[in-house]
Length: 127
Image (cartoon, rainbow, N blue to C red; front, side, top):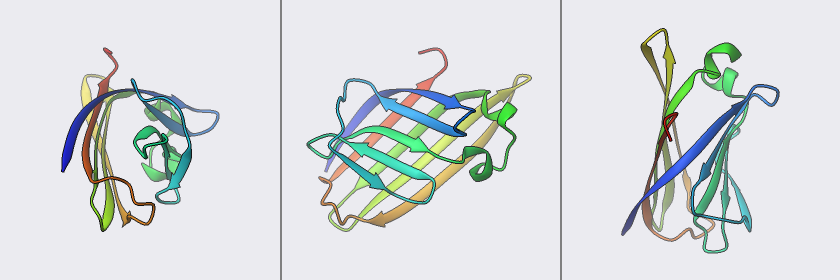
């Protein structure tokens, strides 16, 4: 199973209450995968993730918009095998030098035939 590491950049857009996570070096979108009510993954022509979108983030993370603006680090592990696609996201918010950690985990059947892979995606505000 192929394992790769990717740098990402992220942005919380308060007016849309969504976190957008773009994968650096992966361009284009030929398909969109609705993973859950709140999670959408854009895929390039080879079914490699190019962007993640987390909608209704304040509801999902049960936090106020002001906190979500303090998003300081994102780590994602995306695993695909012939049976399933598993998303494990860790989101850190830095508030007064204290880190608040939130997680999002979703697994769905691999109906789109995403290639077997393990992708590790990471970014912090210092990128």
